[in-house]
Amino acid sequence: MAPTVGAQKAREFVLYSSDGATVEVYAKIGGVVDLSDKVSNSLADITDKDDAGYRTLLAGAGISSRTITLSGEFKTSTALTRLEADSENRVARNYCLVREDGSAVELSALVEDVEASGGNEGALKYSFTLQSSGAWDLGTFSGTTFTPA
Image (tube, rainbow, N blue to C red; front, side):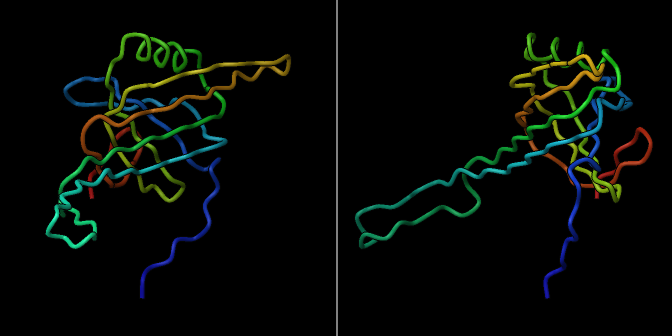
């Protein structure tokens, strides 16, 4: 029997970004209000005339990618400044998306777009999309450290 995953609240997710040092230290960007985490796999079609009209795919080939879109509230303006600079300069950085139970996904990603807005209530709201660059790891996160599974 497959394990079941209990319902999780998007607001319980937290995103951290790496400082890029040799020994990475992660800093909290902010809490998540809305989250979309999409894993895509493009497949390698190797169908030829001998396949009698049926598609044949090459196992283990193709391209995997991950797109994470988040929105929420920044804890500091430093987070917004870093995301804007990374987006403008097309800088890849390691990010860690942490779930309520401490499980996490770490990936190198580029900021595809970033949007900030605020109202008279004072909270600075954000929305941005991360596009993976390279492989990602699943593991756990504690404090400022990611541990691969």
